[in-house]
Amino acid sequence: MVNVIWGVFIIIGIIFSFFNGKVDLINNEIIVSGKNAVNLMLEMLPMLALWMGLMRIAEDSGLLKFVARKLSFVLNKLFPSVPKDNEALGLIASNVAINMAGLGSAATPCGLKAMKELQKINDKKDTASTAMITFLVLNTGGVTIIPTTIISLRVLHGSAAPTEVIPTCILATFSSCIAGLLLDYFIRRKNGNS
Image 1 (spheres, rainbow, N blue to C red):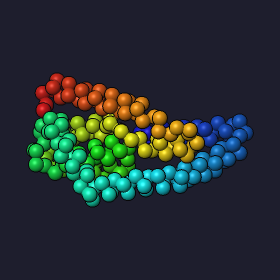
Image 2 (cartoon, one colour):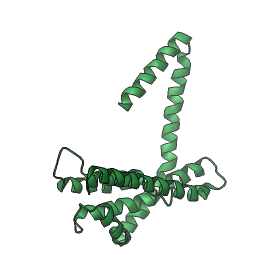
Image 3 (tube, rainbow, N blue to C red):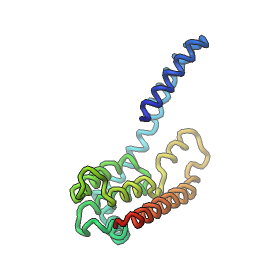
Image 4 (cartoon, rainbow, N blue to C red):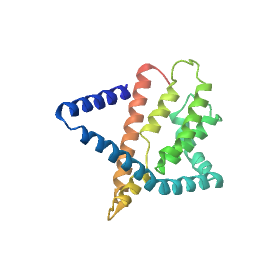
């Protein structure tokens, strides 16, 4: 649906530029936007590679498993329908830990594997289970302690203090996570789901 909306906006913009005689402006903007997108990607790639490498070291060293064990008590309360020895809880914990480091793209494989494991224990294969919905809420509104992408963007654009956003990001993501989980809990209770 979003693709259709953006497609309509683009077509309207092109038609509007024809009627106003500003086709050159559209052509220039397409070229400049493409160039800026490639430059941004090339500038951010080293920072993301560094953080993803550090997360790989944390995974290989067992740090993520340690964090997963520490989070297991909370996760057992959030996901009461998931058996305590299920692999999904470890994958969810890894996803949460990686998201806390601000590496959402690096957390995607763990998130997809967690959803796959949750689907295995789902009774209704054509409908998302309550555990799947809770995980989606936790993943979307998750707490970020080190917003690496924001910091790297601020560094790239010459910020004098690129890390000063950390307390604000922690507060904002913590608030959104708690609000989302509370809403999820109340809706589950209202619908009689555990």
